[in-house]
Length: 321
Image (cartoon, rainbow, N blue to C red):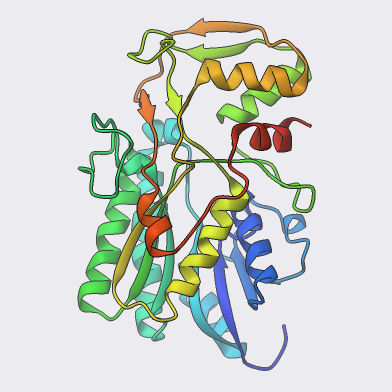
């Protein structure tokens, strides 16, 4: 480790799928980065631009003492999390421990070290099922699985730290982050994700399962808002810049603002890949949200943030070709 103090941004979970894209965009923006990751879901190989890397637990005071011995931390981007909603139904304790309680430990470390700027990766799962669409940041928060609940609890604690303890934070509620680039070439690690399953069906000539086709949508299948991971990463850079002057707490949706049914996504995937996908309709999964589409007007207005890569064909081309 370099033995001089430089101003850095620490990215927890920076060696993962989303994290590697965020780190790449931060480095392009001229930021000095320290990646803190336990590699439970990431890989050091994903850090192709060579940021400083420390393997360890983001909630470990000893790890932070090591980081701060040689660096002045000006901000933290907290991406490290358990993110599989279906797994959270089976292992709720794991999700509350990692996403909520360990985040509280991190906040205590930041408070003790007088690190006052935080970008927190949250999720559209905090919204649960909504009637009014697209979903705004002011919608009633009613998660339907432990994953969403664990993230909402973490949001609430962050709000307290901002209100009473001097923290300044941006919360980003991700919708469906998908896509990659020729430069990064890191794909989602969750094998159960929508695009991962589509890619598997195409590459292995296997059956793609649609979980339920009797929802109240145009073709009976669920509607999803897909945002390119590079756009999501760009939103983190914009949030970090916003925190240079902003005091308090701000919350933004990060999505495309457009919803596609599962069947519509499959149709475009077949067009892009020029291959047929055999489809089988299976029983709906527990805790499925029929429609999830972001209202992205606030992030556009406040951060002057515009999407560049989140049209459906661009996303599918990056994943399937």
